[in-house]
Length: 475
Image 1 (cartoon, helix red, strand yellow):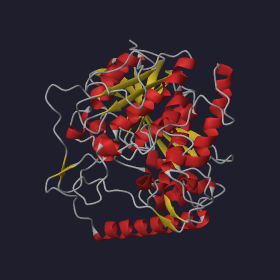
Image 2 (cartoon, helix red, strand yellow):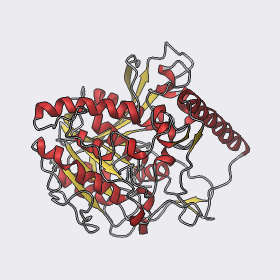
Image 3 (cartoon, one colour):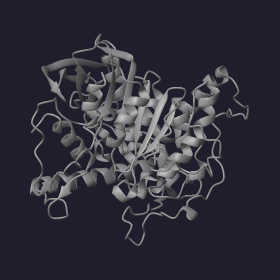
Image 4 (cartoon, one colour):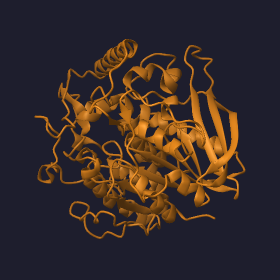
């Protein structure tokens, strides 16, 4: 298989964009079925333990992502807005308006505390150090161009909990012809160019790329003089509740369960991206002032959190991030807070976030409109750096669940912060409540805050060439 297909295969597998020959997932082996059942039990126990710590007696159920289900998530815009306003990122907690850069620095610190305390969790002060090791290096080609490809492992000091090992996987590919180069860190697994693709499960086949489509984003980046890196997020922290006593979260807690204020997987993945940037900043072939972070779906959420908390990242490509990412969590459209606080997704967030999905008792339960921040807050925290919001269309698989309009509204609501800091925004003058979304395949790409909804599915592949041109091609 040509080397261009390797990252594509890995991306499709990681993103769950499988096509099954028989229309469903392949059967599990007895051992795999037993492991999945044990993981489900441990997740349920951890979810219940966090409810006990918070004093929650019951949770509100989330809607189904299946449009045909009796409890299907809302996709009717007329029912999506049971709220009238958003927290103002340009108003201090004491009500003082923010009108200067100096005042914004104080407000930004307030918002970072809100974001950590209510939604994504606090990173412990004593997270162990990471030591990076190069384990493999090859000279090969990507899209016909010579590249230097390296595999690194970031080993986390685990003397405090010897039974818990965290080894972060980072693959770095840079063009040979130019140096130093800008680079995109992508939240995904994968292999070095030329590695054989991972085996497909029985009964699974990959979609055939449409004829005449763009080459993979990795090829486009190399052709434009960029490098790219694959950071495998699950080598930092598992993507399930059972893993919260392992990974970097479990290591910092010595194998114990989380406390309500502590970080979830999204913040842990962002921490991993920051540690990768620490390492890349020591590499003379990489321009550390021009590093981007990218992710799709749940990894789009993680990419936005990364961009918001670590100002060293110059660009973000945030694709189809949905609830907990760019979309407004207040909206009753597609995925909602009750889904995020359920046992399948709660591990992405701080334990305290469960209160926003609680039903009883009333003294503990919160509603979405009680949130002191929302998707627009994360976008505001990125200003004045450059953020590109990417979405597809429901007809091609970027489902209503993602709530593209909710992300659009958040982007419009974040504009005043970009303006205050002297950065060009979307150029939209209407209110975030009523501003119409641009037509599909029409990008707003003239500012630091950018938007483009392509006519593809749950992927950012059709937007790579637009991102590269927007960020500035280097040759």
